[in-house]
Image (cartoon, rainbow, N blue to C red):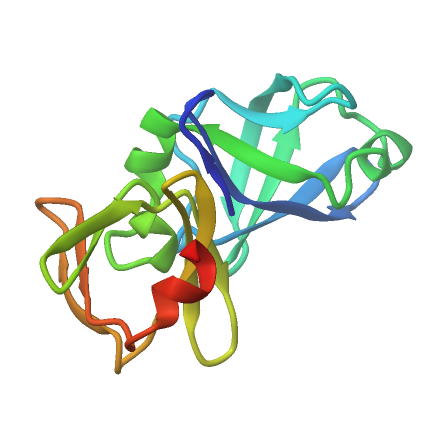
Length: 177
């Protein structure tokens, strides 16, 4: 799940499978709540050159907390559906804000991280692992992974879009030295 500030798109999941014979798909997402994507006009897939191409949503129906059945314009057969299975799905940042649950870990994309009062940077990507979440950001031009778990995460301020952390001594030195 990546946030690319340059483009204004946020990855929310991937096309997990085709469903049925008429081009329906299963979108596996990390929005943190059931969603029928009501009001969403288009989602985006990248082409081979890395450009974001819109795919217009004809219909969507909740399957589970993390999966939504979707029907995209122009995908009308199982063969056509299979050509985009496993592709990463992106939303415009404004649409992402509408559909993400406030308590979903993915909602931390774009939040500022402060370690013991010092601003480190802005969360660019969330990497979910079994026992912790890693936030990817850049500090002084270098990629840094900040672990979020009960020992490092002090407070989440959704209003200020702020994560307050207390990192172990030396963790940042690993990345910055």
